[in-house]
Image (tube, rainbow, N blue to C red; front, side):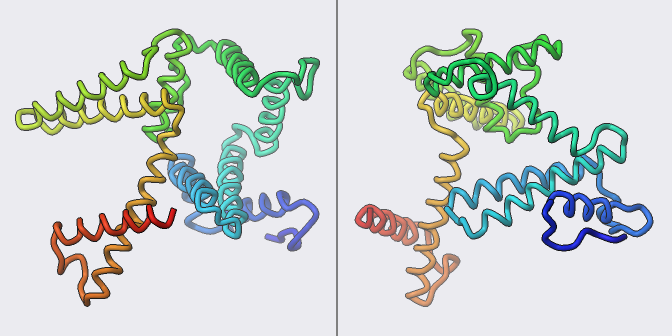
Amino acid sequence: MPLPAPNPPDGMQRLRAIMRALRDPDHGCPWDIEQDFASIAPYTIEEAYEVADAIEREAWDELQSELGDLLLQAVYHGQMAEEAGLFDFDAVAHGISEKMIARHPHVFGEDSRDKSAEQQIMDWESQKAKERAAKSRGGVLDDVALGLPALLRAVKLQKRAARVGFDWPQIDQVLAKLVEEAGELSEARETLSHDEIEDEMGDMLFVMANLARHLEVDPEAALRRANAKFTRRFAAIEAALADQGKTPADSNLDEMDALWDAAKAAEKRAS
């Protein structure tokens, strides 16, 4: 199947032609031909996180490539939808364009631009609420996507409920609930079944997400930061042990904990 030449004026045209070729039932790639929406969805989520990771690390030399990988996912889904007679990529682009115009009347309409960022967020949410009503989705939480990462979905569920007044007004109340949930898990962990422990753990994580929301902290970003900190400090432990001709498997918890404290102190001195 002939493809547009490299570096044409319209890069999207070439990318979409490549995807059509990959999905061609007679001459395409057997793996690509076998895929469907469900099988590709995990890759879509993974690529979105790769973009977020590059930004978090300020790896600007990697960002272009990661954005390309993410764009490929949209093209992939668009091609499969076109094959199924559902919609095509042009419809996707047109739909998001219309949505952006409708949600920014202060840019594309007659509304004043003289608004704070907070007011613009309120206007955005109001417009989204009108769109949900137009789709005849009755429940407040009905269209919070099931496929979101659980921590992100918890925050979105809580935000949606808070809009109709179902929310603790004080952070102290959230902290009290967290202590309560931790206490329940601690007291009952010896007598609960595994499913019950999982349920209690879920309750505690849900309250943690709520606490992050009240503190105006993105829990996903906070956890990524904690992951990076753990990775960095554990690498310091490995390096310190390697200087002694040892590995973590040759060490013990007390020694590694002391090395952790040393790595933590070194970071504080450097900051």
